[in-house]
Image 1 (tube, one colour):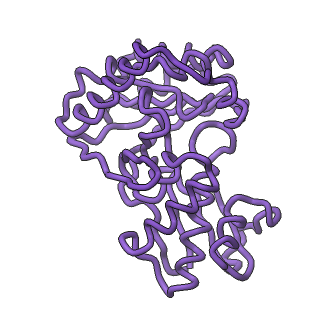
Image 2: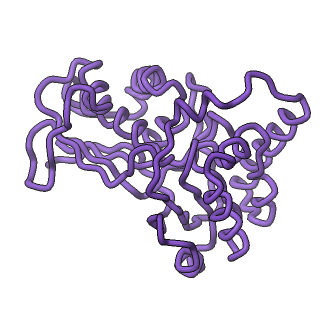
Image 3: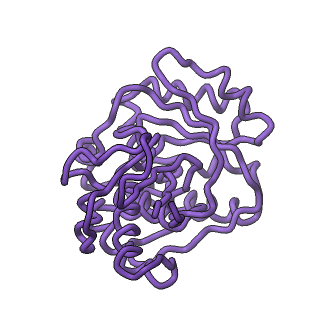
Length: 276
């Protein structure tokens, strides 16, 4: 058995802790040694193993992941979802999203502290979630997702601790309006408004202050013709949407001295269990 789970980018600008997008970069876990390219999880403290044990999973868990840790691409959320799905599949003899989603999301949200990354990795596509319920956002276009991934890491807990306890009502309304319009733009296919409706006043500017090179990368992507972009989760990765035919040109023009550049697509499958 192999559990395959996509990476994710969260917030999408204004949708703080509520919007997520699954990406075509996949973490895999197996409950038995499967092949030489797999390696055992380093310890029982690995997020996939902790989640696996939480639902009663038994045996050795092996993990293979190209998702970088601490970069804003949902590594911990993907690992936890993978561990939970593996435990459910082991316990029940298979995995069914409709049957198991509530149990998995409740535990994934508890372990993560927020639901957006885990929900995107579990469901696939673009999701809106409040932790208790998750809804897939319909997409009327299939963009490329260009990710500028710097080599330095960001601590999500430290980044969240820097956010203010109170915000101005004007800023709340600013984000609410753009979050609603962003979902509507995805559902209608209106790419012309994406640059406007992915703006944010709640978290990105404070995080860009800690990673100014990420702000430069975002501005560069937009200047090169990307439809929109945002700080991925708490960063430092920046993600941008663009037409599939323009993605390689955008990626080639980004600064690459201290970063990896990935051209990805939206993963619509979410977590899947495959025979080894």
